[in-house]
Each structure stands twice: as C-alpha cells, then as structure tokens.
Image (cartoon, rainbow, N blue to C red; front, side, top):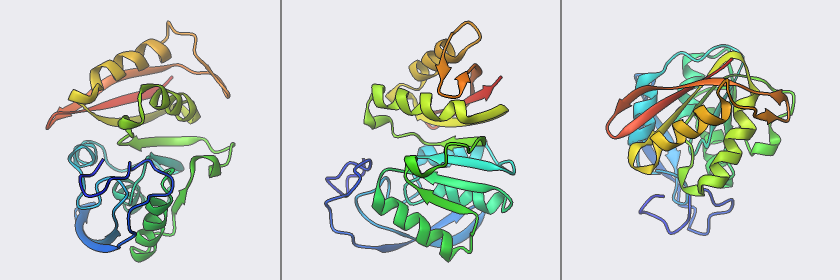
Amino acid sequence: MSDETPDHYFTAQPASPDERRTLSVVLDSQPYEVETAGGIFSPGRIDLGTSVLLRTVSDPPTGDVLDLGCGWGPITLTMALQNRQATVWGVDVNERALDLLRRNAEKLGLSNVRAVRPEEVPDDVRLAAIWSNPPIRVGKDELHSMLDTWLPRLLPGSSAYLVVQRNLGADSLQGWMASRYGAQGDFRSAQGPFTATVTKLASAKGFRVIEVIRD
C-alpha cells in the first residue's frame, strides 16, 4: 500500500480524494506520460517489483493475456505495446485504477486493452500468458483463491509470471504452488484437472519472479 493514501489499493471504491496527476514513465523502452491518482497501488512511480518483472519477461504471445491486479497499468500497457495483436485484460477490483487504465490505454492509442473487474472476463476466455505483481497484502487465503481461479485458465504450455518480494513470502508461495499444482498433486479447477511446473525464473532487488508453466 502506498504511503500517500490511507486506502488499501485493493479497495473497490477508494475514500481518498480522486486527485489526478500526470506521471512520466518509461514503458517498453519509450517515454510516456500517464495519469495516476491516490487510492491505488504505487501511484507515484513504477514500483520496483513491477520493474523487475518487466525486465525479466518480454514480448507476450498473441491471444488473450492477463495482468492480474493491474493498478494504473504499467504491466498491462507494456504487454499491449509489445504485442498489439494480443488482447490484454487488465483486471482489478479498484474502480479508480480501472478508470485510470482505460484513460491511459486511450492516451497511448492502445485499442487492445480491456480494463475490467474479475467477474467481467468472459468464462470462455483462455489465457496465453499471465503477468502479475499480485496483491500480496490481501492475505494468504485470498491470494491462494485468486491463483486457483486464474492459473487454470492458462492454455496448455502457456506460462504465468508472478513477481513477489522475498520478504513477503515469495519462496513460501512458490513452494505452495509447486505442491498444489505439481504432478503429484490432485488439484481440480472449475475447468478440470490442472497441473503445472513451478520454478524461480529470476531474483533481483529483493524480488523473485516465479514462472508457472501449465502442463
């Protein structure tokens, strides 16, 4: 949660004033100006974990791809810039964040962005990739439920990349996913059985990038 606001960034309707500001950022190696506001995750900059993720992975595949917990949109916008043939779903529960993402996508001329609440992603959408700086502070049970919901929507052979701070439980989360989704597990999603290979792809600046490849 940002020090600039008393709201949790995962609040659906932030109580803090909706004071919009312009932020200069670099996305996909190019400078842009985007709109941010208080009451969302990291409104004053691209946070370090997101920067680590974006330096680690690039060029999302064509198809439906997901940014889970999109905020004002640094991951969503980067995915959309890198592959304009992809349909990029920016998912968040924070209505202010979604409005900012829509405005930023329009400002950058990105017609391939869909900024929506989780329940607004059609049930039949299957994902070619997930990139996420997940909302760890929602709590372990809620985070696990989110992963159980979205990871099984990956297409066979497709990957999710999650960046998590080491001090906030990255290694334990990796272990939980490996145990739950590994070949020896018996996890079943709403779409049926789901197994995946879970590994640490990279480590930098106190963050881990965890790769989940659907079998």
